[in-house]
Image (cartoon, rainbow, N blue to C red; front, side, top):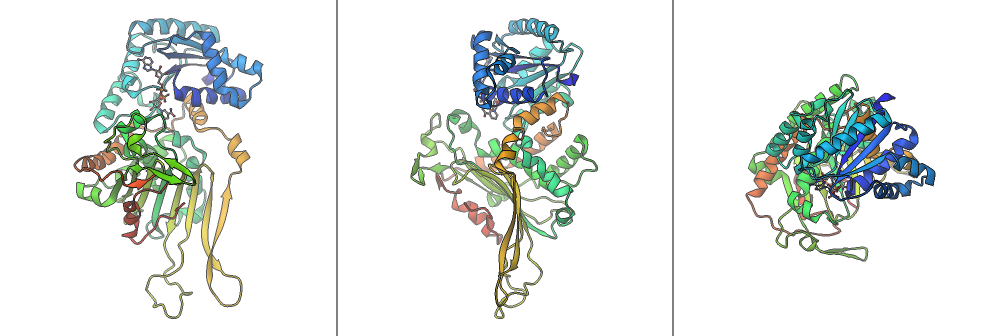
Length: 495
Ligand code: NAD
């Protein structure tokens, strides 16, 4: 389609994200024909690379996708490098000339997609300069894709948003949350709204609690400098966790359209209780890893990771309970946890259903009305590394007598299906090309998520945490387990 006749300008073209995600995703789109020969990419960054050198970098970035040498060559020929310091205004004139030249050469109809793959502190400068240089005054669309983090609290996010809004309309701003590009996150809506079995039970009458875990087994790797300024709350909860939560909690949209879904997500976020300081202390716990050992591997403590302060009080773990004050969810805790150097890498959702009113299989010595010994029905959605869902039920144990035992219905996408399905960044770039922002984050969602998270940060910043408090290779501090236990629950996933 003509929508994909487009000029990409990637700010931060020499960076890690560009190499690991953007070039491979563009190649996948190219190979499938979603991008035809009418596209060009301008890569910009400070380093003085030549086009030839840039082509080598691009080819190396796509090598693992096994292109033929001709394919790789042809794909790379669409890439142009422009050395550029984003804060130097004169550079935008050079960029503009190259842009116009490529527009002619590839017949792009003025369509532009700007990808800001660099530190957010430059976002404002870049968009302002794009406008002032006159680069946005062409026919065709002008869209901007923005990487996380979008601000570091409500105030800074709002300032950044105002700056960007001077240049781009909300409909042309695509705020990336790569979790929204994941197959099984998109599948949450299918599971809920295409199955009467689930949607009719999806409320406080039948659901006991909801658990969302985004666990990483890695430490901070080479991102210590960034991470130490951010921490798990801002890095994971503000964006990914609250996005997943809003998809689980929202009301059914009237149609599966961008506007309808967005308006329901925003309503769900708006119904999340904003905690007082005291409520934060009761409902949220934080952790930082100390050294630890897991299956013969030894890990150092967070404070000795590269570029991390030796007395750092940055949290590498968060667990918490959100409450949603609406008819559907009143009284149902949404437990969330995320952290680094945990036992296992994995993102999963557990929907824990209520017990049957009476356990008729209880032993004759158990009184009616006391805690039933049946395990709960649990719907688990596996987001990564495996993708699928499972349902645990209670069945009869084979044999004489009548005891029950848990059975599990399990569905996983095969490794082959996962391999062949589009990667998150590929889906999202494809959507942006087609003007579909369903799987991007609207400003209203960003704003409300920051309001929620700012309350937690504010309360935490008033007290010095007792860090470090969990060993690398475990599932976080004891307080994260106590959080559920005091409500009479447990984490369903205990690797
Ligand atoms: P990076 O540090 O690897 O790359 C930054 C890029 O910006 C480089 O190309 C660098 O040359 C360029 N740059 C820096 N200062 C410049 C200047 N004054 N003028 C012109 N160019 C300049 O960073 P990254 O890991 O690629 O991340 C980029 C963005 O993506 C960040 O917002 C980050 O938070 C986000 N992000 C990255 C990842 C990831 O996996 N790497 C994941 C999610 C989000």
